[in-house]
Image 1 (spheres, rainbow, N blue to C red):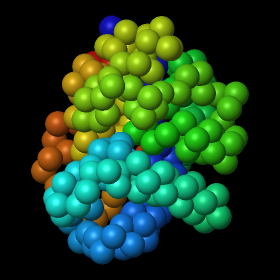
Image 2: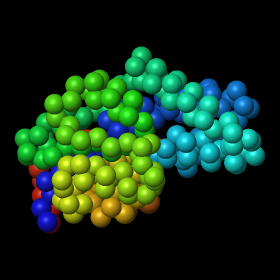
Image 3: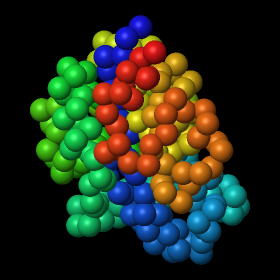
Length: 220
């Protein structure tokens, strides 16, 4: 099948929000004397906030009943941080314009809550371009399960084999591939040489490097 649909992740791909999520998590978790190393934090990148909190509460043997409060507080803090100092990643405008010109259906699929999706859509001024959004917060499973990508494709009335996904996280890449979709990864520069990205169909250093030739390559 020819590709006719593109689905983008958000955090770390469209908005440089991963450092802000890390800041928010560190600030909130410090109240409970939890401190994560950079390596520990990376292992849970791409998970839903509830799964992130559940994992570390279990790891540090703390009361699971704290989860709803910690989850809510992290989301509140990160939304405020994105509003005040969130920056758009290089190439976002050009890649959206490219797929619009190609007459692709465009969607967003993320582990983040709908409130963050709405915030980013407003920041990027892409409300008239994005045809569907999907938040794993509202679904039974989060990434690396493929449900959020399949749900977005269903809303767009696209077959999974017609979809190409753009991701920056390992869990997101696994979700896209499990959905039987093409996956373009744009990892953080500190992780780009890692061998685990070999599962992707294409690896880029920036969204601004995507072009018609690469789309043709994905279609063959």
